[in-house]
Length: 153
Image (cartoon, rainbow, N blue to C red):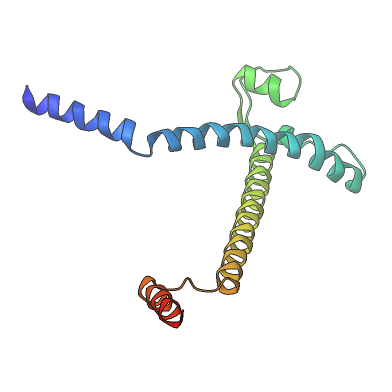
């Protein structure tokens, strides 16, 4: 029983004192950021690609029908075939997710680069300020100067 209690106490310390909260916040922000990237791809990038290619380009609905349900005569759309139980190779959805990943990786790279640049500027500014400011006089030297000045009087 004491081993179980020790394990539970150790887990509580890990969850509360460790980086668990930081990790949870990162996951939540990451999920929200993923939605932003999905919207960027769907609402901004794909329409531009459609315009450049001169037609409707919706990668999410691109698929290869591997096996249709027996006797199926319905529409040949992704949703209808999926609902009917067809076996589909959804390569368009994969392409969309791949584009999302590349964009997400690019945005994260840019953010990390910007943060590193800001850190370098702050570090450089602090270094310049430290170099410009005269070094404080050691206490013993200041005391000796005071004694000297008193003796001169």
